[in-house]
Length: 93
Image (tube, rainbow, N blue to C red; front, side):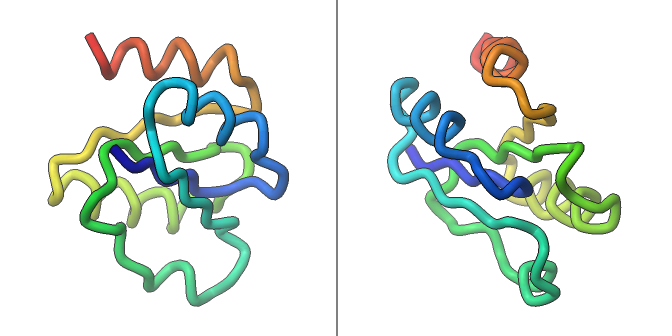
């Protein structure tokens, strides 16, 4: 079960948390590079985490649309592992 984090610069805590939850590998796109707007979500991704305060609206919409087409859940979170935990609990339920 792989996870993708979109946005943010320092996401070590989030990666560690996702690994504890069984998501391996955990990939990270900063969202700063223009080329990341044209990347495709890896096929083995089981959850996408969008850091809402670290990514622009256009990229967030594009990621959401692509994830919906792949039937992959998208979790929107601010820079808080607690909020990420709550959001993932809603997805798992």
